[in-house]
Length: 134
Image (cartoon, rainbow, N blue to C red; front, side, top):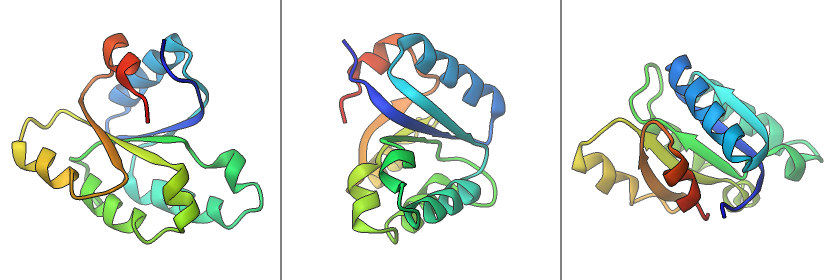
């Protein structure tokens, strides 16, 4: 049985991938709320704004599914910005790299970030969702 989360966030510049992954999360019923962002820049701004609010604990995502290869700000640039967020935000929001990259260097590089808890290949599947326990 998959763990239940209050809120998850999908960050992927490909809207089709976001839609597929959102439908998989909905089908697995692992999240009450799903935020989607088609850019890492808007997602990091959203997190910065949310952590300033008194209701941050209720609105910040428990899991962030993050693509690597995106224009303007890629997944690793997002992770660098994420490191600058508050300790409370970093403790609360765990990151799952969700990518089509098969480059072993991307996998190794993602391990250097404490908040990256899992590395999965796109798209999410029922099996991969069952393995998520962060």
